[in-house]
Image (cartoon, rainbow, N blue to C red; front, side, top):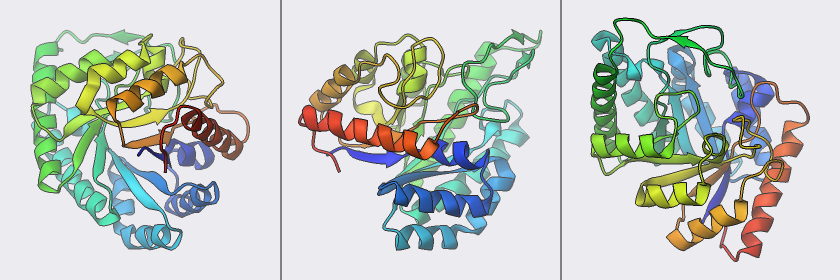
Length: 304
């Protein structure tokens, strides 16, 4: 049975990036008011992550009192991809703390991103200061940059992270995102194969992969049993906006028929909003939730 939840982009859109700890509490209450039972939470970089860890008891007690369950924890640790051993070792230590928090919160999934290689960005940098979509990205490649060295380091660090996650009984997820090192399904599969850990798999994010011109039902089939989690938002297939469901050109019926065929029984998170979102984010998320529930009812897909 698939389960519908709310992604943390809702909290970011409503309260800023990252939300203060008090607004984190507000966002959790808001998600309960919207009728969700399953939610995400994030910890951005070291300072915000430390604060979330320090306030974990209050966060857990609030969620429990509202009947909420954490389906996924996303620590945003940029140095996990660093080729500087001192930085990546620190990142892995914080990742272990994040795994401990995920277990404490009752999640069985933890998510990392592949971020960007150490390139010189001219102008906008993807996701540096806000969750922004549809950016024009320009770079200069430093003469000392080696793709092979960067890739080998990425594989090594994610293998270490996957082992840490496995030691805590967690699945480690990665979401291919436009503008990052792993930006499409095939790159994700290449990394999964290279890391070689059973608990390492993918988030299929419809907003990003549709903007990569992927055929989403095929993306799901490619990932197969390495598809651990789904983020849903809509767009026109050109820019990676995260619009409400039904407001773009995604083939929702095709995707969910394939998920049904695959026997996918994981979480589907409403992942709508982002920097520059205009309108009522509560109404947009609620409309998307109803769209998804109606779709799954029509396709005779059991949903919780």
